[in-house]
Image 1 (cartoon, helix red, strand yellow):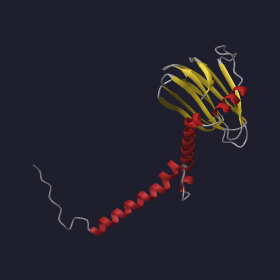
Image 2 (tube, helix red, strand yellow):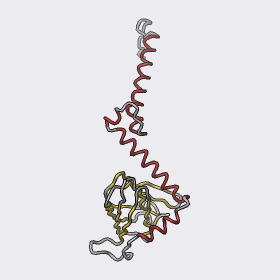
Image 3 (tube, helix red, strand yellow):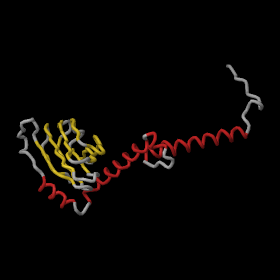
Image 4 (cartoon, helix red, strand yellow):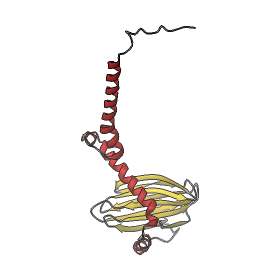
Length: 207
């Protein structure tokens, strides 16, 4: 068996060298924390370098979307939830279910959100069902969270910040309610039109 030669005492780093290396490593970790991790993850930028590198905006988006997701999940406990539901119903313009429009969309909803307002719409779908959607935003920008919940499960499909529109395909990950939560963070009212088609049993306000 090959045995490596043991280094001599002269070859080993001194205590001062080890201390210096430890200090350098600690300072480097602190610099990375302050200039990269804090701006990118939490939107906290004490040096201003995160803004220059484009990391602070990333962190601000993450924090804002996390707050909105939490508000979405807790919205069922808000005392004005029922009022919001009836308010939405009074604003909705919904085409007859499963009667396709001229451009092929089965259902269409149009509503307006004042600054700070929220709204939620859901499709009741079974696992594997597929629905196409197109979201049009007029007069401003909105944040949205496309997610689902049912039978104790939950999933987030997509999140958007400052959106002026989106379109795509939604494939149900499980049986339950799948849809959108919007919040108007802009300074002016935003009118949202949502068009959907595909396989689903119900198109309704969220709860």
